[in-house]
Image (cartoon, rainbow, N blue to C red):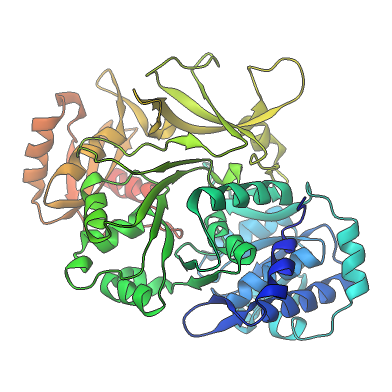
Length: 503
């Protein structure tokens, strides 16, 4: 039974040593290079006495950054990925939370780190990954390793503005990768096009299946997501056949008309998640790729990435939402009402997750851990932790789980309980609108709808008045050239809310 993520690499390097594992289109690393460099870095860290502690990997988006993760694991530590594009203030807060003793950097990030209030040891990747390997020391470390040891800590945004570090163990990640791979059907011929930054857990979908199967993963340059035609050309140039992207990245491609100029030639699997995919945009992808598999994925960082999946095999009306379907094997979804009882058929409840995928909690943050990682209220007999997602859902008539909204997006307006997602769904149905997002000003009690498209604001208002009850019609409608995004490609709802409240 596999108990350590490094086993994926060690089994594959024997079969496919010279095959490219990770590439950005310019620089590439083979499985042998990944193996050798990771073991060298692991040796360098262990010789300096770093063991069972967080090690920051602060590097640019590059195949070497992925290899650095593995090097940290070889040292028996857990990696904490950071990126030069992250805001300085956020990086400083993460360092304050972690109090790490060392960091792995490239030349550029090592210079950047000098400006931070931190005095730990810096390992330059190119030096540490080019040294000798102490095989006996690495074996001794592995012999003491447990599958419940942390593999990584990734930081998510906290509601208070202080990032939360989610710690996941080897067992959780292996369980996730095995189940995800079974559902999506990855194999040795899979060529991934990675979209998400490497400091988010979403990159797990490409990083570890690549090692497991001997696949190849391309780290798609971030700037291409601002140039949809060149993005699709990149997919074709590298024969990328599998993407697992956030919805907003996909709607940029379809919404800006890229498919009218160039079409993906090799895509056979399109997995998407993080947000509700507007049916109008989904149809554009489906028309271009009639033979591809489309799979909707759902899951929070606190449950090691994705927990549910739904393969799209039927047509959906414009006012429908694609279900999130059913949980992965070895995962259970509890839909709990306000009294912590199971919701009835068709009733709304909060998605709560139980299973091996539930992570260890928030690093060095017992209070916020206790709020979200709680005792299963349906089990009074023994300790059993579940994760409360804060997401609302219900089961449809086919028994499929349908995501409704975040609890945060459920508002009280003019005496009515409103899901902001319902307003977005209607706006996204409008032919001249390619993307929409709704926010609520809690002080002024006003709903603002932001959208991208050719429609005039007055036309959008008229359209929503036709489709929605009066109390749900936005108080303000504003057109933007592009909806702002968070670093991992989701719509920046917090930023939009700040814009709306500033007026």
